[in-house]
Amino acid sequence: MGRYILGRLLQLVPVLLGISLLVFAFLHLIPGDPAVTMLGDRATPDQVEVLRERMGLNEPLPLQYLAFLGNLLRFDLGTSIFTGVPIIEEIRLRWPATFELSVLSMLIALVLGIPIGVIAAVRKNSIVDNVAMSGSLLGVSMPVYWLGLLLIYLFAVNLQWLPPSGRIGVDVGYSFKPITGFFVFDALIQGDFKALSNILSHLLLPALTLSTIPLAILARITRSAMLEVLSQDYIRTARAKGVLEFWVIAKHALKNAMLPVITIVGLEFGTLLGGAILTETIFSWPGIGKWIYEGILLRDYPVVQGGVIFVAVVFVLVNLLVDISYAFLDPRIQYK
Amino acid sequence: MFIVVAALLAPLLNPYDPATDRDYAARLQGPSLEHWFGADGLGRDILTQVWYGLRTSLVIGLVSVLIGLIVGVSLGLAAGYFRGWSERVIGWLTDVMLAFPSILLAIAVVTVTGPSVVSVMFAVGIVQIPKFIRLTRSMVLSLREQEFVQTVRAFGAKPPRIIFLHILPASLAPLVVQATLAIGTATLEAAGLGFLGLGAQPPTPELGTMLSDAFKGGYSLSAPWTIVFPGLFITLTVLAFNLLGDGLRDALDPKGSR
Image (cartoon, rainbow over the protein chains, first blue to last red):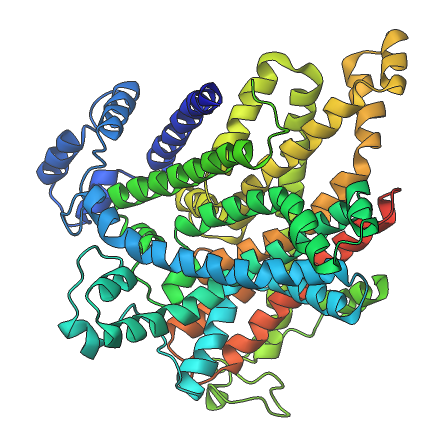
């Protein structure tokens, strides 16, 4: 087991190198001199030259890449051109927002998606099954940011039940003191329930929006995995032994149908943790996705570079965890 | 099922009389007899815009999937058939590309090439490549060991002949299904780029760009028809391709559908 984990970690090295190489290549493919772009058209040639020297742009490309790689290994992602704040600090500030949003979205998707999939499988070809599967097809066919705009229109503008954007209301935010940056956690440990309800109300609409795709995919995967398992001999045996149908499904079938479901949960969660550029933008959610998008608009290259690397690494690591969790969940899988 | 798809697609592909005229008096007007879907912030008829936007989106979807299909299948065939270092390099490339969220990869490509319809086609096409590589490679791996391939190889057929005359035709069905579903995803991604302002540039109408105009213009909430209809037609288009893909899978899968 330990050797398997070590082996998987070693396999990550070429992928991580590839990620760094791709990001580096992209930034150098962007037309125009980065120094000129960053300083604007009115910069003097001297100023441009100073920045080029500072950024190491006058070095040969392979040397620049090695320097870039060396900095990466020391977690030095540079500083944002516009705020002057180190990228790693910017990520530390923004990631809690993305993390909270991802967790709640995934929870919504799990709590709704798995039961819907199970019921659809057990009642195969019934009205419930058809409605659930059509709904999930619609879920993956919709642009999520469009759904987000419609939800804002309905719940924030028309009904005025929920706030349309941001992480916390201005009035509550004034007295609220974040400690870790994870607002829900901070409000809980301070026993500030007024802030907590305000924070949760801000979370709800973006989380609902973001949960549609994982929810739809989970429902479909759970359904097909359950159908596969329910046709197995041991299920028939359990039924023949007189095990109550509820337990056949809950204990015997569901447990064995979880493996493909976990893969999807990992993939989707990895994607969510990278920040949802579109959803965060429409809800003005101060997370990683919106930050990267603003970096692109402002041509803040260190932000884009650091942000993109962060997102890709998180995705790769989450998938590594999923792979490792297999070994615990299915003892039949042999690892060399 | 096919009728549903045909019904959804037929009106979309019907050429509509061009009417890019602006009617400033009708600016942000709600749906009426004159403007069925209302008018946008520049007084343009939304129905006409949606109609033409759909064509842009469909062309982007088709072309980008074609790019992904051609490049992905070629690389997948090479990786699966020749194995060895080509498989390792292509496999590594696939892993690296899949580590980036697709929209981010697409944004990166557009940043390099500059926003335009052609850029979006390339960007979304590149994003599709790894999926086609994986699918093709896995099929080639199982096919190359099968008897009919072994037989032609024993008769001395050269690799290109084996690949293009025997392996490729045998793997066509799953590829067609994947390509159909990919058009749906590509349309969504293209609209996403449009929404971020990286897609078609004015005056070319595009559905994602319409949503972006409404959102950035600040009238998406006061004049909801400016977002409802473009979004609805993106959804319908993607849904149609997803239904078609599912239908094709059921029709082409000899083991029957689940």
